[in-house]
Amino acid sequence: MRGQITDIEIIKLVFGILLGIGGLVLVVLAFLIGYKYLVQESRCTARIRGTVIRYTRAYYGGEDSGVHLPVVSYAVDGEEYTVTGPKYKAYVTHTRRSPLTENRMEYEEKGQVFRVYNYINSVAGRYYNPMEELYPLHSQLDVYYDPDHPKCAYVLRYCNNKWIFWLLFLMGLLMWAADVAIQIVLV
Image 1 (cartoon, one colour):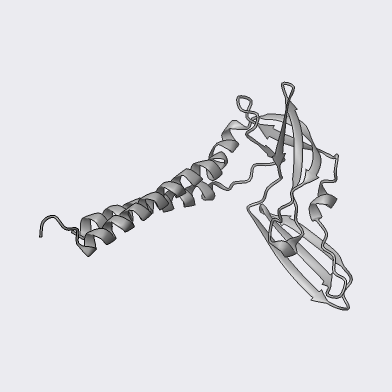
Image 2: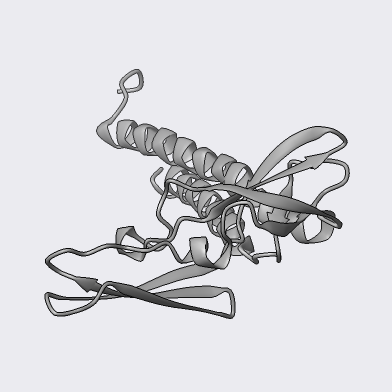
């Protein structure tokens, strides 16, 4: 019958809409979240000193890490800006709990990977933020910013997280390709 829609056509339509919207969301997220990592290295050429004013509320490396990154304030042409950092490619946490352990923390940075070793007393444990020791409140850090768009900035060194953009962007394209394939194959 010519005027009726078959079950296959309804499934193709629903999956087509869902894959199309999903792909669009991923591509938009790629530009909202990851695009800055593509341009920071080449555009952020100006340097200024910024001040650590606080630490992020969010944990980096999971709840057991205790890592809260510094929030650095800097001014360009009389305008105040803030940037979080320095950022790392990865945060790795190793936690050991024991009732006989003294609360302490060790850390190391190697190849833009920040490792935290927490030794926690399981009875009265306390986590320490290694960033407070590395970058105390009111300390001065170098901020590199884009002279044309000073809000685009990073602290101390560029963190190569371009993979975030490419992962989201390519997954969005893959979803669109799957959508087209479903529409063509299921004729």
